[in-house]
Amino acid sequence: MKEKTKIPVTVITGFLGAGKTTFINQLLKQCAENKFALVENEFGEVAIDTQLIKGVDASQMFELKQGCICCTITDEYELVLQELADRFPEVEHLLIETTGVADPAPVIQPFFADENLKELYSYNGTICLYDALHFDNQPEKEISLKQLAVADLVLVNKSEGLNDDEKEQKRTGIAAFNPFTRIMFSDYGSAAEIDLNNIQRKKRTAFDFASFGTGHSHIETRLMEFDKPINKNEFLRWFSYLMDVNKRLIYRTKGILYFENEPFEYILQGIGGNFELTEGDLVLEPGESKVVFIGKLEGIQF
Figure 1: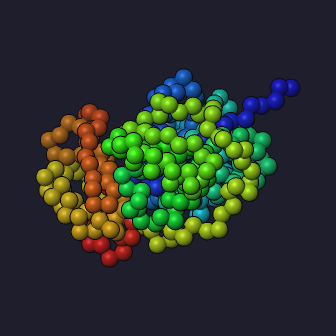
Figure 2: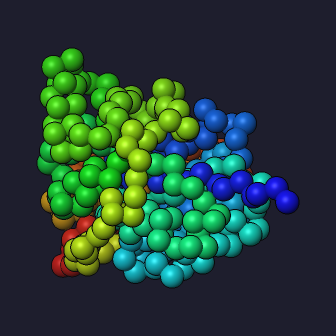
Figure 3: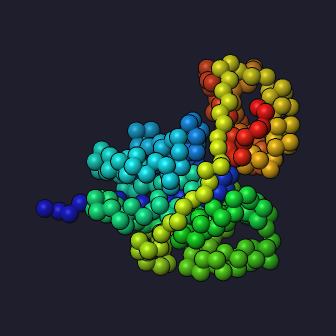
């Protein structure tokens, strides 16, 4: 009997707002001939990022919500991996996107420690999105460093504004912290130069992914929903003020919005006090607007 081919697994990590979802969309577009499945973990009860992924059949996208994949939903995570392999034997590659506040080590470790998963999957490597604009001033720096530490490939994203000296400084700093990683630079989440079959430079073992706790229980999420199209000017005036006043407490915002008298949905992305609103798909019927906030939110008046 022919031995079943194991499914390669690539983990995508990086801090909040580093560009993971944009990168995954670019990767799926670049590798359109491959059959991917995606395990998507969002820190909160509503999956915004899943709605923004293009290129994976909806039946092969698995959402893990209401907790961080690295610490609170481990049992669900391993069951999803089993179910995926059983239901979709035609899948050629599995992508796992962690939350922006996840320690990737517990996400990776089951592929070395669980005998059933070892029969089904082969660990391909971890890609860490490094935010060239915000990394040096990110809150929760310990989490960012844990993500860098396990990366087989660090993609320095949003690097279009860096000169050669600044790029070399980034490269030197990353290599000093993780000398085994590959380092590449990306503009707008581009995946054009990445070969998914050639990520690892160092053969990995379970000992590479020991974890000693994540320490982000103080980070929480808040969801705002609007069941009718909203006034664009009023929303932007309120939202700009909220973000400016609480820029050290609100780490990340994301949402899908429907405005009055607008034929498109709008995608909201924010880091700290900065945000952008981009035009999305043309819609026949406006849906329910949703905005998710992530950070130290206790005491903030929404």
